[in-house]
Length: 106
Image (cartoon, rainbow, N blue to C red; front, side, top):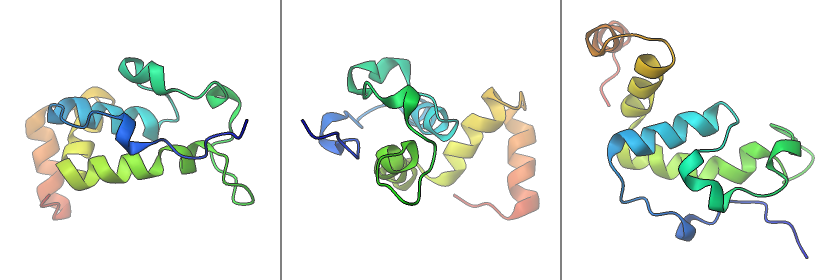
């Protein structure tokens, strides 16, 4: 049996609230797997390297298309909002100030 090298986008219901999509994006960005998508987690996930430029079997390649789809759908700003609020313990106001300081629009 051949290993899957990419997450099949057709297996994911992307019709989710923005915060859910941002949480998925954030979870993958830290090389973890979203608990509500465990049914799609490859059995080899924990052993996969984060990035292997000489192979197409790594975590980066596996989730990259899903992360791009999410980012295109909700915007980089929403992905970063989730990160700032849930990982950095910033308020929404502090996040918006950070965006203004850096010229982040969407």
